[in-house]
Image (cartoon, rainbow, N blue to C red; front, side):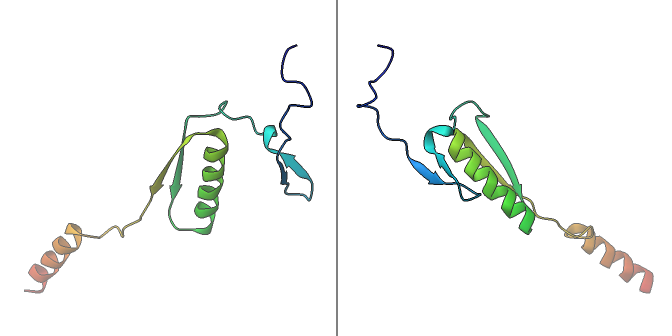
Length: 93
């Protein structure tokens, strides 16, 4: 009456679980989480693991994954280095 009869229902997809058990694909509730997931990655092991987790979460939730690569620069990078060199030349003269 309310849904498909048991003999017509498609079998559940069984996936291996983390602790040796199993998980059915239907156990994942798609669409009730965030629509966009942001992951910041800087190349460290921890950030790469977090990025992998975010990718799996986005896949399961049907969400968009936005990855931001974070790079650090030394405090005296770029124009500041040139300014410091010019200052040192003036002091030496």
